Amino acid sequence: MIKKTVAALFSVLLLSSLLSACNTTRGVGEDIQAGGSAISGAANHDQQ
Image (cartoon, rainbow, N blue to C red; front, side, top):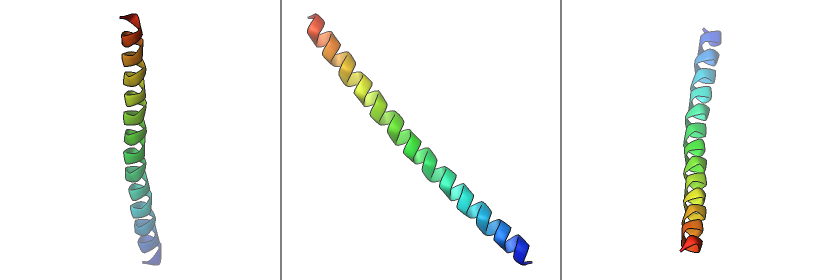
């Protein structure tokens, strides 16, 4: 009984960690995309 409870608790903690990591990864991806857009915009502005 205790092993099942510990295993369930561990599973919940692991799953919550993975879900929060997905959010963090998504945020980093959006930041990188915004940086790339800024660089692209600056390059286009310099060409004109």
